[in-house]
Image 1 (tube, helix red, strand yellow):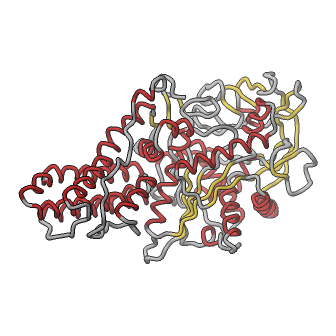
Image 2: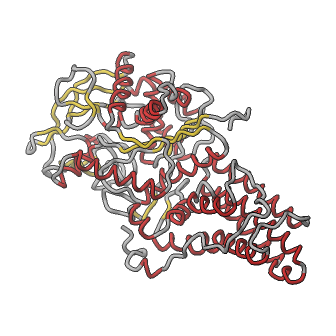
Image 3: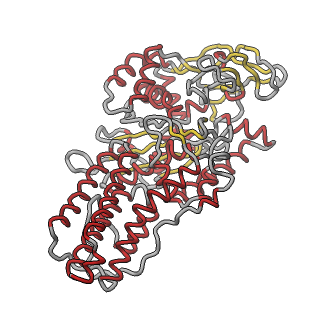
Length: 555
């Protein structure tokens, strides 16, 4: 909440996945799970959260996939958009609006921004060279060109970006370029396009980036590097028949607005779409024009320049709209040393991960391994280890242990609070302090540290039980046993708040057992509440179910 205690509008803007193929666990750890943890926390502390994203249906990876499969781009979009929506539901990703860039609303918002920037002189028309495939008799969009990256010598770099080093590219920078359609070497041919004059924002973006505080170092350094190199104007239309129409006729037929320009507009268009569905079409303004609003963009590091340079330039040029408050871009998840990649089939898909692991268990293992500051190596074996040795052994065991003892020792009901000893109140003070630590970590998007703090509190309760031995007290001093178990139950009720943004399904199960918790605080469980014999919150992973997948074949 804001410093004056008033609920703050918080926009949680999440990367738009290309509807060109299944998303993998690297995507989930890179953007979608972190965004959901952050959004769930912000809602719980009382802020007015709007978490938006959608399927990017105009990216050239879609037309590349459609060509390869011999189907239409719409066929590809329909297939993978439906798969994404199913993934999010199975994972408990709590969107306020998940849409697509294929809506009339998105086209209208894109046209509005294009025309405003054009009218203010930040877009102009130029003739330039673009690669042309003479065998296919067509101009080639960036993704239809491959070659060697001039920065890292990766031989399968695309015409828009190198997947190996993450650098954004222009096709003419590639060494030994080749057409993905025919394999032939394309030739430059003149064509006319609209350009976004990024150079207009060289100084203002530099000043804005210099004013950022608390940003991740790799995000800020990468962004400032672009400024230091000098911002280059970039073409924002292409010779395509798939995409949003250009809202002026200056270029003639066969041109479309290019995906990298219009996809980032989706954050605004999705918010406007949400507002319209609330029967309050102007409600979007509270997240985009309110100076007290906060906007946090969850992306992978390969998308940094689009969210720290290009989109802020467009927002500055348009005028009156909030720039990003933070862009906590994650690094890469790697499998056997290679970056997880949908296009290259590296890493488990989300569907494959959910077929192997329970949703909360998968969320836990990924959250414990988030690549917040550096690339993180992930294997099926490591996911299983974290689930069994950490989630099940620490938190799952604690919950089952306490509920079982309350059921058996306290007559199947929550005992009254009773008079607590110093070690009892100290434990609860530690849990309350953990709630504050976890809140501070999540609010700063230090999600791994937040999870570690919550799990450390769970370990402390297990240690408390080992020290107080309520199973022995139940024989010698039943009243003391009830105080110990009531204290442990109260501690569990606080820790589940710490873990609730990470583990929504098991938290909902505990709501049914202990009663719902409102806000970000520990509350006493109502005395006299019935406690049935519990079932385990999480299933231990059977390693034999991973045969053939552990480490050698991760994708």
